[in-house]
Image (tube, rainbow, N blue to C red):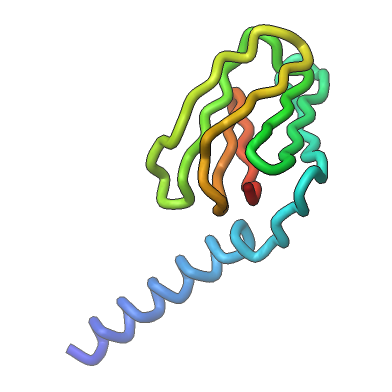
Amino acid sequence: MKRVNSLIIAFGMALTLSVAPAFAAPSPTESEPIMVAAPEGQDINVSVSGNTIRVAGAAKQTLVVYYVTGTKAASYSIETDDQTISTNLQKGVYLLKVGKFVRKVTI
């Protein structure tokens, strides 16, 4: 029984250490741009200021906003190459996903 508990604890610690760096990075400050490389080789710029999200370089893609728990909070269609989206999201930490790229932001 002790060996099983030791293995469970060791596995839990290994999992925690492998996931921790993703959450250890400091979150960007308000209106600090986040650079993400797009699949086509162009850059996607995402910046947040208050409840406004600005997405550049992601025309014809979808911006999906998730709570940090992984639950979908909102979804927006990006129609132009430089689009500003006003949201009604409350203050907090969110994950923004454009295509295959995900970034953590504070709103």
